[in-house]
Amino acid sequence: MLFPNYSYPGRLRNNFIQSHSHEHIHYLLMLCCRGIHLAQALARAMKIIRVLTAVAALLSTSASYALQDCPSIWNDAKLRTNTTGAIRLTMLHTQHRCSPVRRQRGLPPSWHQHHSTALHRERRLLFRRRPPPPNISTPVTSTSAAGVDHGFMAQVAIGTPPTTQTVLIDTAASFSWVQCAPCARNGCYNQDGPLFDTRTSSTYAAVPCSTQPCVSVDATMARTNCSSSGDKTCLYRVEYTDRSVSQGRVSRDTLTLGQEKIPGFMFGCSRHHEPTFERYAGIFGFANDRVSFFSQVVDKSRQYRAFSYYLPSPSSVGYIQVGSYDEGGLAFTPMFSRNLYYFLALTGMTVDGSPIDLASTNLSAGQPRPSEFVMYLDLGSAFSLLPSHVYKRICDAVAQGIKGYDRIHRGGQSCCFDPSFLSTERAVPTVQIHFRNGVRLVLNEARLMYETPDERLCLGFVPSTSRFLLGSMQLQMAYVVQDVEKSIMGFPRT
Image (cartoon, rainbow, N blue to C red; front, side, top):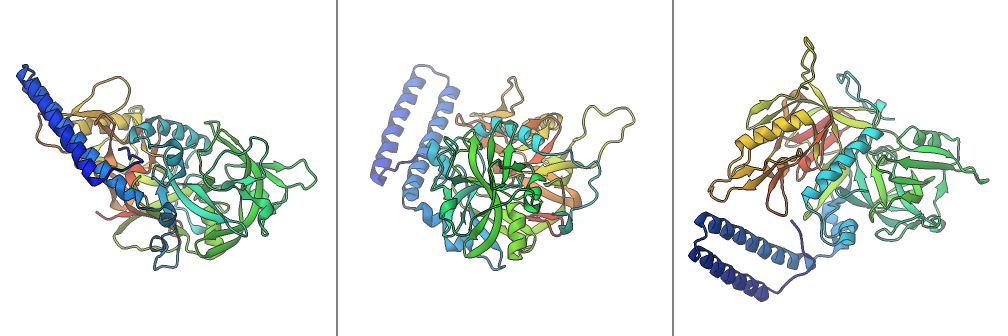
């Protein structure tokens, strides 16, 4: 749904709705009198009613939005407080009205525009990852942890005095970076807020080449080398298959998170990019290695090795928290990690209680059917990924159980439905994703389907070549925990 950046007074809003209602009702009467089929007139009337209702809601919410101040949302003490002593950051959807990405583009795209970008995301992830282990029976322990349209943003501050930076949160990324001044010619893109200027920070230091911190960065998705100048500082370059690149100096400085100061935080000082990374200042990673933002905060602030989050919708406010958490109302399944990335043991999927066969159609004769599958975790992916054969089976099962909608049979692999205006019943099947230990993630309509601008409902999954990946739409508006210390992940108990 699109949120306007304007508002109307209440009286004007009511007059607008009343006048347009009378005009459309008169138009419908004319249609009926001219012999237009009653079903067509009824369908048009119901569509007009929905449009007018949506307009009224948008106009009323835009008026209340205008009263809110973005800095107060980012710095609301109530959102930052918790009873566990953990470090909590306010988190906004990139399409929230206070997001720099949304302000750059004006009105936010709908969910359907993320569908194609999710495929690019998959290619990027495949490039960054090494193959998963063939046997996922060994959980990770604490000792083993040594260009985006959709995502979630938080604010941090770097340097002394601190400079606030709006960064993208990515659980599939390791090395963290922000843009820094001074930049090379055309080296920095326009971001929200000031660049972090290394010359004005009294605590800034470049990491020397051939030192252990430089070697540690090279063990991640970033690659390092030595500068050709006399200072011999450590340089990094992060490159993705979508041709996005960040490169600059490996650096250290004080990181400020609310009232918590973390000296010696290691990050990339980006002075060159290809192409533009929207308007956020950089990317902060939560991957399972020692140089990620998550690991450094845990080690330097002596927090418990876990992070929890409540993913917001484009119109709400959420948070991400590092440290101890509230276990109430959660069911836990084993969580695994290897080569920086988190994944779960997927045991099944059901549609209204009926199981879906997840096994490939290419199994050879006599080959045993697997009972578990690797499912990666990535908050940076808007939709979850399913192997194409599983996507088709889920789509067919949803089409069989949905009520009040007609399936659109077209080319391609999209799974969308038109509203049936002659039906008085509207119902969408419940899909459940099953993990080890009997843990279930329940997908109601909001987490299963998204609505296109022309009022179609579409399945919130993307067909993949062979991978399962749990994306953020299926986790939105839910309290979730990733406990790296105990190698478990918590979902809302059902």
